[in-house]
Length: 166
Image: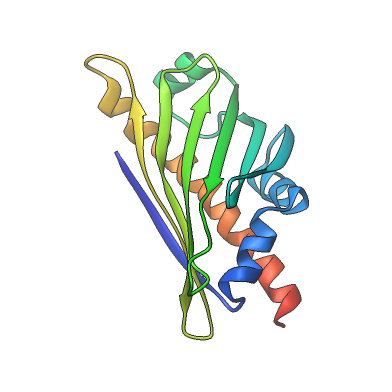
């Protein structure tokens, strides 16, 4: 199932990237998403950085069928590997999300690009439930919670952006 979300910020791409590679920023996303516990790390990787966030999330308002599969809590690991800065300041990263002990994964890309005097941030990914016959149904049930997590990132980026550009 395709997952896609884009938003605009007042900060330029370099400022957005500098926020994205701070553990404090990642921790704020986890708090805004309602994580029960979380841990984030950032390491240099080639011309970019690798951001790893492990968080335990409540399974949320998912239908009973999905709650039976995942339980009351979900242990989620997200790894974003950012690539090289381009001449215009843009960057692209790969995104991989796994749920411990669950047959649900998400893989895709995230991007930061110049947009007028600010930036455009985007996430485009494919959510997969590797279950014969009911995988598509599980993906549709899980999608709202995945979108809520991405919306928490969007909200956090606006909060950090507003501090720099009131």
